[in-house]
View (cartoon, rainbow, N blue to C red):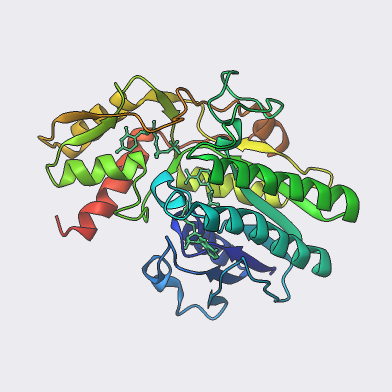
Length: 313
Ligand code: NAD
Ligand code: UDP
């Protein structure tokens, strides 16, 4: 049994990670300030004796005796991270410094939830870990993209200078149950709109792409990465290499929900990356053959069932 700290543990991905770590027999401290996450996401875990929920903001130092730290705390949806961009930068950067300081003091392993956004609007396709990216440093997405890039730099420097045992996961678009209703990301927006019979909002003409990974596959990849040999630091892409246009996603959601919603087209937000697709050969190689195994339609059906339960449909 390990003692594991999950920052952002009451969020979408964090709650699935906490659940899986407890099921694997570990003791879990879930730390969250509930900015985009909620107690409802972890209420089913509160009765477990080896689960602790702590309200805390990672821009402030935190101390607890743990063996492993998963650093997930950070708003992830463009709508949320742009709401208070300075706070987003503080969470990404000061949060990383606080957690790295803790890992250093405890000699704990620490995994950073980095993002495909470090590649910006990529000129290399699909994206490999050795691509440096194409990010607008002063654009509307920069608080998140540059915050996460700075966090990667902090991680690698704590490793090189202080020998901290680090793992950097570059996560590509992930979806599943417990995304917040008002999260603003495309999968939850489309499902909620389809279930409510509202127009499906496509930003741009729907030809731009993303690659969608079901949350269970990601959690499996994160845990495998955390438990690799100390020599493996990453960055490692974790995503589903199957690329979808946004229009295809909208049509699939309409078909799976049996909705009568129509498509409506809105302006594309600034700096919205045109294409995104992970090269996951490194993950496959160092994580014992890891690759996403949940077909997108199966993942969408599970997510649709979740939202139907929320809406009592
Ligand atoms: P989420 O918004 O559901 O979860 C983030 C959690 O962090 C929330 O519970 C929120 O309340 C908490 N949080 C935010 N600021 C905090 C702070 N200052 N102190 C403490 N807690 C704070 O988003 P998610 O999709 O679960 O993302 C989790 C992590 O994975 C994030 O770091 C995100 O950048 C990364 N990521 C996610 C995706 C994706 O597609 N879901 C893709 C790339 C990277
Ligand atoms: N998008 C969309 N309609 C929505 C929400 C998002 O067309 O209601 C688009 C968005 O412009 C982007 C893609 O879907 O091109 C993925 O957006 P999301 O916010 O989920 O994540 P991103 O990958 O941009 O961080």
